[in-house]
Each structure stands twice: as C-alpha cells, then as structure tokens.
Image 1: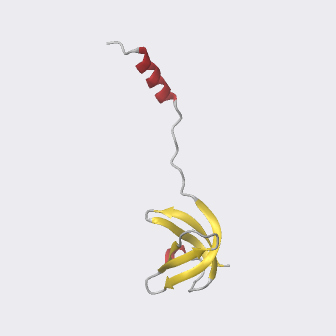
Image 2: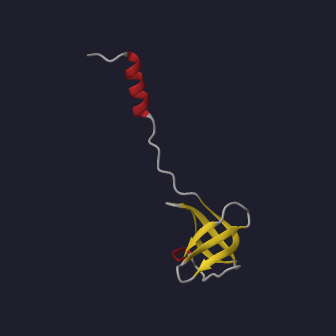
Image 3: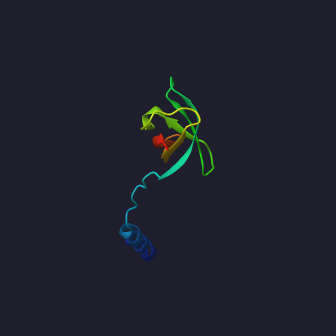
Length: 91
C-alpha cells in the first residue's frame, strides 16, 4: 500500500531534523546573604542580592563553612526540587 505524498514528506522532514540535546541545568554566579543555616541538619537558605526567591543550600554545596548573616558567593542550579546553591563560599 502506497502512503499519501503528504505522509512521505512529513516522515522525511521528521527523520532529517537534528536531534535535540538535553539542556544542561542553568548555572550562574551571584552573591547573597545567608538567611538561615542549620549546621546539625546541614541545610539552609540564601537570600540573593539580585532579588528573587531564597535559594536552598545543602552542606554538600559548601566550599567554606557558613553561618547566618554571612555574605557569600554561589552558583544557582536547577535541582530535582527547585533552585539550589552550589560552590558556596564567603565573599
């Protein structure tokens, strides 16, 4: 059975389209102030200087030890549960 010309053309167009690569998580450096950090539980939040929502920080994302009200630089990445800070160090 022959396929209609439109189907053949559509199939050729779809098969010749370049494959999309998975996008890497967005990451950009910024500064902020540690709003809260619980050393026992190993997590807290940073308020970005540029505004926007507070960013979650886990002890695994720290380069330096941090505490409440510290000024820090960090990178924001999209994690499984939302924005997360990595490479956090005192500014």
